[in-house]
Length: 275
View 1 (spheres, rainbow, N blue to C red):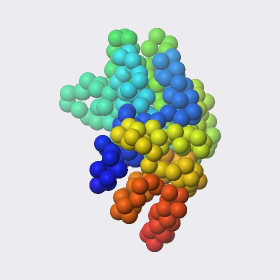
View 2: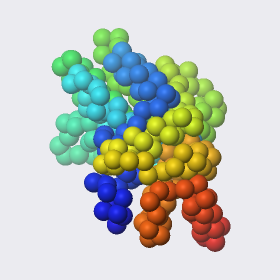
View 3: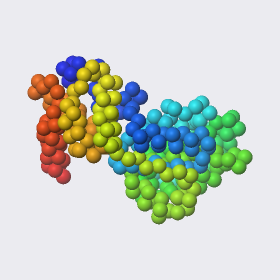
View 4: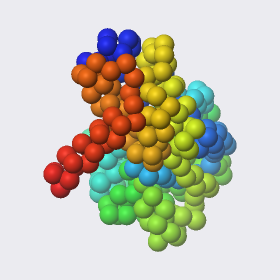
């Protein structure tokens, strides 16, 4: 809609994952390093937590792109609100465990399929990774004990898979209340919002990736973006995308701080009206 006006090849602030636009701030770089180490060292379980909109899911997708061929399959569970039986059936299917004939879709059958597949996978020199997104919901679904038991699958005394739990900050409290799984976690990683310098670098990186050849946000506007978004990437994307739309409609050459404040006020007004 506004790409031609701002002389861009693409929209710079889409929230979908695109490796060209992926920006690694200090917290993201450290998290990726730790996650790769844990998986490549074949640790049992890892936890990645952070506020809503911080980029946890995108980081998980970036992680999968960086892992070597010896890691796999890499399975993501994006809807953890299932029964234990359904979860195990789903996991066996996603991992590619050989089906039974005829299929019974029972817990016992799924566990046998998982045990056989993980053992064969490990024998071939590979290591499976199971990522559970929105893991802060697991306490409500009653899957925490099921996940703990999954960690009992081993091959020659080593974990047959790595479980990566990704969720919002309440996930930390849920693990504290469920010590049996918390004790099995090899690593806990907390993603933090961008500092003001990182917000500036994030804007610059994404605009350059979209084809920008000049600064579209004034220095004061960049400061305002950080203040209004609190360094949360999803909020930055929403705010800046709308600012570019409004700036295009108004025929502006550069996005200024006052305009960002106006856009933010409009977003808050709409949210309040919908409440």
